[in-house]
Length: 401
Image (cartoon, rainbow, N blue to C red; front, top):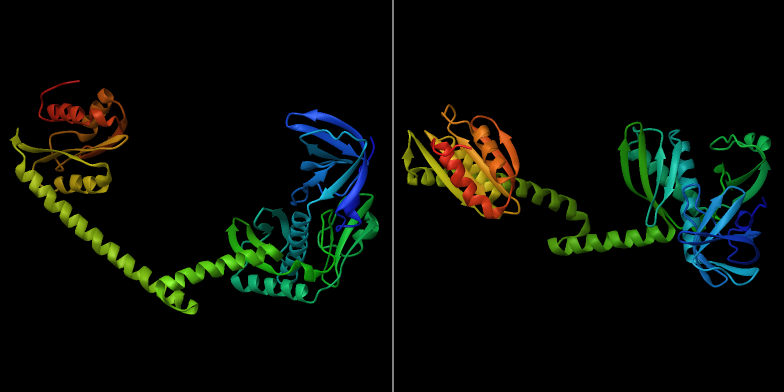
């Protein structure tokens, strides 16, 4: 099987080329076209595929198939010799992110011995996973500072090919087990790695390396970062959002953390106070409902229906009713679906869990609970009143299922 000559291996800045079509084959979403040479980078090593045009037809994806690269197109070229054009903005963005990853990974290894175990490049940000979950903010900042210092120094980035045995003696950041020739990417005086991706020619072209987010997992740490144009766009967005918040507070940016912390504390205290008031109101409402209910067979059966937006209040009223003497609460909450809440004074003669199960068995839904409190849902709202009638009849010893 013929090999595809990978032009991006020797020149990452090559954006236009000519190639001969070797063969093509139909697939479910178009056609795979195979060329004798290509400058399109296929998705591999955590880096997405290049895009662009082949014979004027938009490239959907370049696919690495080992010795060959398949070019996925929606139409077949009508010529044997075709022109390819790589989309530069996407290619350069990927070059910035991938070179930035090499530098940042080397910085983590140099400043703490943290090794990169995986790398993924997304549309807006990229991630690398480190082999430790004990990396603190100070180590993060040190690695970020060291990486950006290499960027500011505008060091050369050299790409070469070496036999595997010789490459292994050159001090690669990550050893390779492959045989044959190895493609090496070297950031002068800082990093040397085996890599098949596309890279800038000098570190200054990376622009800026910005750590965005740190997520600690069991045994590893995921670092989200952005480089170059992505870092600029995200920093601009951060500043815009920060300015909007500062405007709302009528405060300088540097005073926002203190103001937000103060308001959050006030909000928590206000919510606690509000919750206590709601509980007090629920107690008053429960007592009014209890007093207004008729006493039947030694207990007061309180039946009430709440709108859907008052479901939390309905539950609190149910609990409050259960604190009153000889009370049985049969509460319905409208909604799609509707909800039932049954409660009684502890030690009462009814069994709320069983009462609820009988009711939902007849009218649909599900639920259950203990002797003194039960809750269920899944009922059609139109059946709510009838379900409460049925439950009330059972509660006072009338209807049986």
